Structures are given as structure tokens and as C-alpha cells.
Image (cartoon, rainbow, N blue to C red):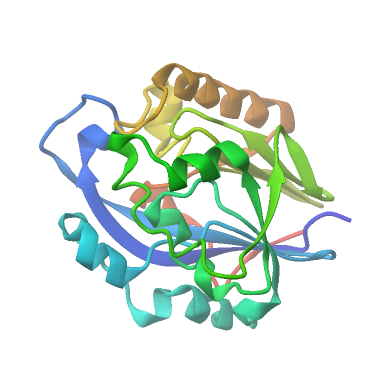
Length: 251
């Protein structure tokens, strides 16, 4: 059986320069962008993809990103709005371990974290330019249950992780199949925006720009092969049009 319902959880917003959205383009132009997580209600249990950012951490370490997050936009509150508790999430996948994708991990204490070994290594021993990105290590709390994965993998029927490195070493994008619905492809930071995809321009923050371009091309191939819709990670206009929790996409 494929996924039953897919929820998009609103985690607030941040600000970055447009040159970080599209490498070297429109330097000095601030852009406010959404941060969200994905909750999959599946016959095999609850699966979560990314957990947004922790407001206290961003205010302390990255205040220049001007976080806006209400109490209703925290992971526990968003899950509660869908009728679930954090402890019910069985599996967690972070597209990567940057601070704006791991801030709510600490609430999912019963979840098994499916993790790329390469991504975990970079988070714990980052290159100098990666340190701010990997500044929130609260995801690695005592008792965290890790399961290492590699390559493309189907983690539940119709729920696939595809390797899309470049932004970071072990980045994963998510593909979800539902009966009677178009396939949903969550790009993670392999594509901040549709413009990244259309123009094949990578984001300004990356480990390997050549790999990042190939990952954009891979997302486009997946969308074509599966007849799917790509959901970019950090673009406000399409985000505002999507169904957000407690509403959901249903199979």
C-alpha cells in the first residue's frame, strides 16, 4: 500500500540574500522564504522528512536570517494540529543536517533517523565554510537512533529517497506515490526554487556545484518519468498555494 495522507507542516520563515538562492545573481536583494517539513501518514506508520529550525538557536547564532516563527509553527504544535504526537513518528529522514532542516528532531524521540553516513560525518566534522550551516547539533541528542542508508532506497511502499548531493555531501530528496494523486517530489535544498530547476542554477551555498547541477537534472528526470510535481524547499509563492497542515494531500 502507498501513502495515505501527506501533510506539509509550516515551520515559519527566514531571510537570505537572493545570491544564496541563485548563485551570484541579484546580490544585495533580501528574500524571505518558507521553511517546512513533510509528514507522511502511511500504513507502515508515520514518516517525517525534515523538521525545520529551532527559533532560539537561529536568534542566538544566525539572527541576520530574521526568523519569524509562532508557537503554532513549532514541530509539536504542527503535529498536534494533524492529530498526532511527536512520539508517534516512527521514521525520520533529514534531507541534510543544516540547521533549518533539523531543529525539531529532538522532539521525535521514538523515531529512527535514516541517515547518510557522509552527511552525518560532514555535520560533525564540517569544512570551515559549512560550520554555520551545521551549527545546530541538537539532532544528535543522547539516545538518538540512527540507521545508516546509502544509495536510492524505498523506505516504505511508494516512499522513495533519492540521492541528490551537491548542496551537501549526503543530501536526499523524497518521492511519495499515492493512489489517485500525482507523485510528489520534495526536492529539499537540491532546489530552493522553481527557477533553480528551470535555469539549472544552483544555490549559493553548496559543497559541490557540479554535483548540485546534476542533482537538479535528476529531479527533472524523476518528475518526467513519474509524472510528478516537484516541491522546492524555499520559495514563498508556490508554498502559499500548497495545502498546509492540518489540510493534507490524500491518496
